[in-house]
Image (tube, rainbow, N blue to C red; front, top):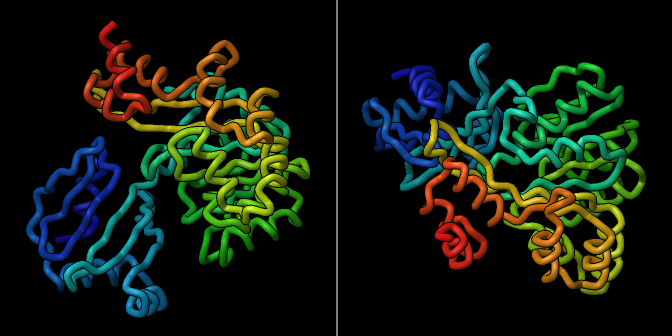
Length: 351
């Protein structure tokens, strides 16, 4: 059994993830559904061979020491993968996330038009949030590519790992990978500020130092794009504030109110009208009303502001889900399961 054969079959099936677990047959996730593949059970010898094929000796030493390893793997001319190697019940296991190498145009992603307008911002902080696998990286890559085709600027991306590979068009784009090009996001961001960037993509604001540097970069005139694993705009604001010690939270509320431009929160749905996935998108724009809410610690009011500001491009998750349902793209069951307010949406869909 060859690793390439498994990955080729997964690619032909449009799988987003491949799971190789010793003692089991290979599995793949196709449009959110886990599906067994038509291959024999994976033996320890096969799994050891896969590890040697995908990693260098230093990486294997790291794996032996920590029993967990994150890395990227590429088959030249075919596809790239984000890989986690780990152990379960004493056996090797791999989780591979397929990375699309060609950046899709923004117009092809079924995103609200307001997201295209955000690529014209000269400065500030734009956050794309959602669960793992919700399409955050794809949205950000499409935004970066849109700017790459329009501006003459310097773009630096800090990623874990590098996913979409950009070709500099009008912009100069530098892509730095965690581990091989920088030790931490915070270190990469600190030094990026000395590299004359106009636009900075931070793969994830995962700790206080990275978050503080990202907000400072936005304050000093850069456009900063990043992600958080939060499900809506109000939770995103609270997550950032809660990273800081209590004595600094009033100050950071003021800084965030001044720098935050928008929060885009994504949830992916399996389509019922055709093969593939479609995003439900909540959009919060930082209007003067939203900035006051952030400063005054009244984030519980954000959903109401979003609901009453649809004319300027804001949209709640439940309204976005309802639009997908009424357009025949998603099932009623999936719509209600992912809703912020399931009972209210159930009544709306029945109307």
